[in-house]
Length: 87
Image 1 (cartoon, rainbow, N blue to C red):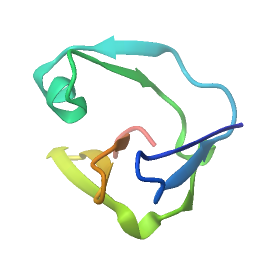
Image 2: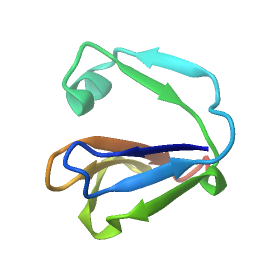
Image 3: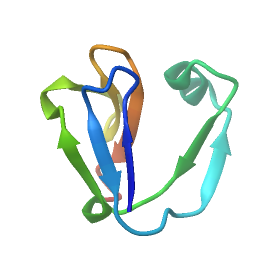
């Protein structure tokens, strides 16, 4: 089990189980969404992920139809991305 939080501490979440294969992406959307030269991503199933605190502080942005990126609305920390076609 891995626990984490956003920069301001309003959102706490945890991942149960192992992360999937970690990939680095340097596409324009990932660079913009993370404010860096690339983003590190690992797939997990929806059942492995849970918000422990601060659900009301999360804002989701629909990047493309069915692809969502979530951020803390207070500090802007990127929290997760979810794809409707891959729960």
